[in-house]
Structures are given as C-alpha cells and as structure tokens.
Amino acid sequence: MNGAELLIQAAVDADIEYCFANPGTTEMPLVAAMEGNKQFRPVLSLFEGVCTGAADGYGRVAGRPAMTLTHLGPGFANGMANLHNARRANSPIVNVVGDHASWHVNFDPPLASDIEGMARTVSKFVRTSRTADAIGNDFIDAVNAAWQPSGAIATLILPMDLQAKAVQQQPAQSVIRPPHRQFQSHRIEAVARMIKDGKRLVFIVGDNGLTETGLKAAGRLSQLDGVKLYAETFPRLSYRGGGLPDLDRLPYFPEKAIEVLNQYDVVVCAGVVEPISYFGYEGIPSRLAEASRLVTLAEVGDDVEKTLEALADSVSAPAFQQLTGPLPLPANEQALSPASVGQILSASLPDDCIVSVEGGTCGYPFFTASANAKKHRVMTNTGGAIGQGIPAGFGAALAEPGNTVICLQSDGSAQYTIQALWSIARSQLPVVILIAANHRYGILQNELRRYGIPELGPQSQALTELDNPKIDWLQLSQSYGVAAERVETNANLAVALERAIAAKEPRLIEMCL
Image (cartoon, rainbow, N blue to C red; front, side, top):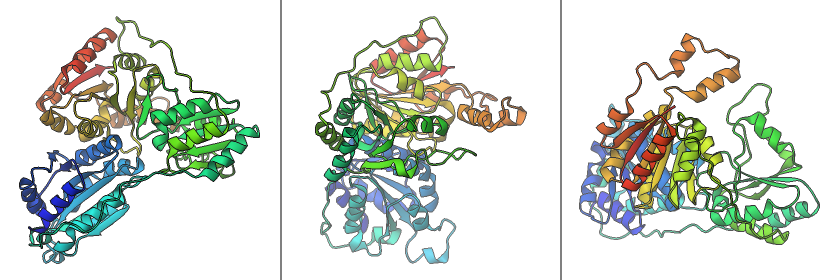
C-alpha cells in the first residue's frame, strides 16, 4: 500500500461518497489508487469551479462532506470562487490538492505556488502531509474539521512523492466524529422574557432553522403580537411550500432592510451572523441594525430548529397553522416575464424537489410565488460569487439520486461554470436547467442606476450587455450532451417544463425574456 491508497481507503472508511475531481500530473498516484478501490466514486468535471460548486451543493443537501481533487495551486485557484460560497454556506468540504514532489518543489518549477496561502483564504483547516504514513490520519483530521455543526472547508495538500511512497498497511488511527448540535437554554429564557415584556421582536432565521421543524416553530412564534420572522437574505438550504409558513427573506438592498428592522425594538439572530449590507453605499450604514439592538438566540452551528421549538413552547405560542392558498397562474398567451416564470415554476414543482437559484432576474419572483407550491427545498448563492447555481444543482442531484433538481439560472452567471452541463449529461441526472435569457447583466445595470446613471451610455452597455453576439443556448447545451428547447410564452414554458420534469433526464430550457 502506498500513501495514495492509504488516503483512498481512509476516505472510504469515512463514508465519503463522492470525489469531484479535475486531476493533473501530481495526482496520478491518487487516480491509480482510485482504480484499485471500487467503493470510491470519482466524478470528473471539466473545470475546478464545477468540482467545488458541486461539493457545496452535495454538502448542503446530504449534510456531510464530499471530497474535491484539484491540481496544484492554479487548479485550486480555479475552484476558489465556489469555495468562497461554500464557506459562507457553512458547507462541509474536504479538498485534496496534489503538490509537486517534496524534493522538486524547492527548485521553483513553473507550476509551483503558495497553495497553503491560497487555501487559508477559504479554509478553516489547512495541512500539508509531511510523511506518507501520516496521510490517513491527516485526511481523517480534515474530515473532522469540515464535518462539524457549523460546517467548514478543510484542505489537505499531498506532495506527489508521498502519494507514491510505500506505507505500512494499517488504517488511520484518528476517529470520525459526526457533528452534534446543541442549544443554549439561557438565551431562550432571555428572549422569552423580552416577548413576555411586550417588546417588539424581529427574528432573522438561518442555518437549520429553515427546516420543516424550524419553520413550523417559526410559524407558531409569528402568531404572537409584536413578533415578526424573516429568513436570511440568501439561505444555504430552506424548505418551502407544502403548507409550511411563508418566511419572507430579509430584503437585499440595505435601505429596505434597515426600514424593516427599524420597526422593532430587538433584532434576534437565530442561526445567522450580524446582518451586514452586501455592499457599502455612501450615506447608508453598513450595519443593518445597531449593535445595541442585536440579540443572539442561536449561533450558526447551534440546533436552531430545536431552539425555536423550545422558545415557542416557553412563551405558549399558538399551535402551528398550515398555510393554505391558491397558486396564481399567468395568462397562457402572454410573453414570459420574471413574474410569470416564478408562477409557472411554482405550479410545476414535483413534491420534495430541490431548486438551485442563482440570479436576480427570476429568483425573487419565484420565491414570492412559491409559498403555496408543493414541498420543496431551495438553495441560494450565499457568498455572492457567481457561477454557483448549476454546479450546486449537480451536487444536490448526486446527494439524492433520482430526485428532480431544477436550476433557475440567469444567463450571465451560468456562463461562469457552464461546463457543469457536461458532468450532468455524463451522469444522466434528472436536472432541469431554466436559463433566464435576457442577454445582459441585469444586476449591474440596476447598480449603475443606483449609482446615479439613469440612462446607460455605449460604454456602460458594452460592459453589461450580452447580445453581441447572442449566446445560442440550444446549440451550446446540445454540444455538452443536454437536450434543449427555447420558449417565449407562458404556455410554452408550462408545457416544456412538464415534459422536462417527466423525462427524468438532463434538460435545458432557454426562457426568452
């Protein structure tokens, strides 16, 4: 047994289900070791950003870490944007990065770089293995660092010579420690006193507070006078529909969020960090609520759902009332709009499906329309680095084989990691990609207007328009092996979506907006 085989065996022993990989020369011993262990399941992606985005989506849905395998510093750098999103989502991921042989790296070969320095920007745990015999324990330590209640990124760097070096045939001595969530009773008591004293409280809920259990408790609390609950603006994974309470998301733009929060005496953080504006705007505070009004009920990694349940019980909140109501549908003959896309998708969702949302064009219109849809789960872009939506949907589909995943995706951000289509096609997963094709960077045009440019000139248009030339989504999708069609009306989309979901195979629908 060599060091690479020791690592692969340690991964199997740790129940690592998938390795999202884009290997190079310095990972060849690991690739050879995978060949000798049929329990290990490598998944090839054409770009490292797809590997890391898929590991993020898998971790959110499966609740356990996947592994990525990338090539030296440049390969790891290609995956860093989606590792940034995964870090903000508290997703558990174990990265393995092949490095030059330890006797070669000091010569500063062309691909040498500071891998540890790069890894530290997105990783809680970074280690370079120093001996072949330690590789198994190093890997288990990385798994334990990633797989904790708050979730984390762990990066292990393996010199090529240690991968190939013979070791004693013995399993890793370190032991996997599955995460265990807890809650703080004194925090529950403090918030309960505020409610009983008649203070006006607004809750921002995240983490596992947006599960079915957490939302039902939130629904009970929301019936109390002076109490309002919001979901965080970009949840890692939230349940929706199926009669669950409709927790609106805290507004994205800071002036709107501040206006909402200022109506209350206390801002209660339940599984979220302090609310901060996404960007800084002159004259608008970065903090969405003053520190003096903030109270922490549960931190990220705490058992937020049980905390909300215990709080609802302690204040004798009313029983949960199942949400009911119609699903609005647009006129069939009309042209597609963001609002109609949200309505049609909401009405078409199969039970317990997963929706990966990236992009402002149709994302929030879908959210507002989906409260009375069938039960589903939604993933959003937690870190703001675009190119996450389709890879995360790919990883989610692998986490629950056979379940339908729908990627509601804006056209500009889709191009960052469009190679994910190839991996989806290769795996023949039931993933439906909806491309909102308005051929522009809509969010940037909105920000230009907020900056004070109401009419976009030729230079601004050149930097925000994607219509010269227009991307042919049908040919692009089909070239990656995913069947595609184009729709322009509400009736066309409803039929195409029904057909794509029923097919239980990869499909792409270009929605002309």
